[in-house]
Image 1 (cartoon, one colour):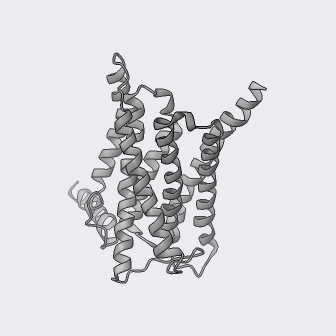
Image 2: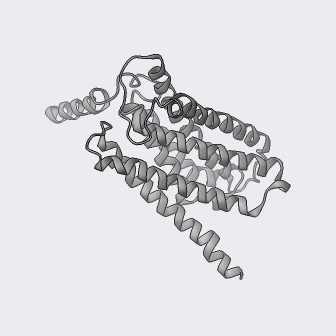
Image 3: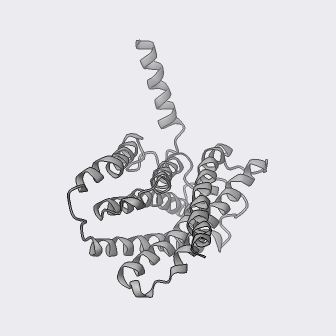
Length: 267
């Protein structure tokens, strides 16, 4: 038994410390997988069991002001991340769109990059509040498998990216996702503060934008598997691609049911 425990401990230390990027491995919520797994477990239990049970005999909470502030914070953070990627990395040509290996040099811009990678990871944790608001407002129908899986998957992938591969080719995921979320949270903000401005077709095109996002990410991570000269770790693509393909299928299925089949029923 003692040998088994020692082997498990050694393997854990190897995966958690030796394989991790030393530049980010001591960051908050990164050093150990326990905090993020705890957050994900509590989130899942709350949105699936504890929250609905708590709200069963209660009236929906009026969270309009809190949600307005939350959406504004998300727009600022996601917009900031998008602009940072454009102005620091892609427009100046510091990062290649085709293949970008991780730069381990201790430079000012690399320190900025890994700090923004951690910020993106933290934003994915903050994103979990979307579902909490649904529960507290008793909008249980919006807590779908697609919604919950997407949030949990992004938290886990952001943790892996921050801990093991902060920078390089994977930055494009944060860039595209932040740009899409800037648009998405702007729509949410308008819909709650100026609902009379909202048009029915907005939501349809936002869903199309999300589908386009996953198509681009599949191409972005997929092509480096067949690019022998690319120095970016190929195991990242093997880890990220199944999630992106699965979530693309879920979003496409939602789009077909909501905007194609539903339209046929009403005509």
